[in-house]
Image (tube, rainbow over all chains, first blue to last red):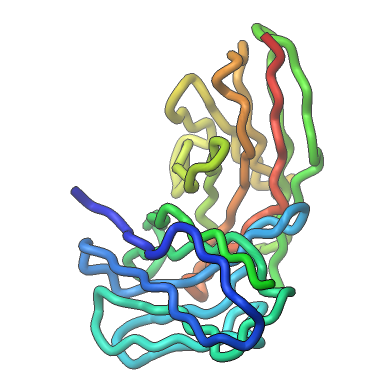
Amino acid sequence: EAQVTQNPRYLITVTGKKLTVTCSQNMNHEYMSWYRQDPGLGLRQIYYSMNVEVTDKGDVPEGYKVSRKEKRNFPLILESPSPNQTSLYFCASSRTGLNTEAFFGQGTRLTVV
Amino acid sequence: AQSVSQHNHHVILSEAASLELGCNYSYGGTVNLFWYVQYPGQHLQLLLKYFSGDPLVKGIKGFEAEFIKSKFSFNLRKPSVQWSDTAEYFCAVKTYNNNDMRFGAGTRLTVKP
């Protein structure tokens, strides 16, 4: 079954404690991205990757890092989380180019206290 | 930069009422257009998409949307909503010159039984 898998689904952490949210897709998609969803703001892109070892900033990259060492995985790293990073995070993947749709993971609800 | 506007933040309807959710985008080139739905506590699911051809597209669960190029609009419609349509709806645009998918702020639909 084609899917995007995120882990964990829920996470409560303390300010400053490094964390990683994993994302894996089994569709051999080149393009992967991370979004955060906040009430009234929709989904805003944090980082994206066009292919292995190619990553770039989205609209709200501050406080986040990513890596793309393998095609299927695109982890999101918060080196020093702060309360304003409390949000719902989604990973997505797609083929590159137009006329393709994005597939989303189940989401990770992160709370930073 | 391209943007996506959804006109209604919260819509409340009774069952069997007709639904129209507005979506406008600001990009003038070739676009792909999407409507995603997010049921409470769940991830985003694709309702329908427009790539090319017939500007009236039909999606799952009786939803349809019409692409009006001259108005830069892609409004979502359903003739008769059900209680189970209670969810948040996101319009999204993907443009030719990159793979970014831009989302609107979302419209929360509440259907009263």
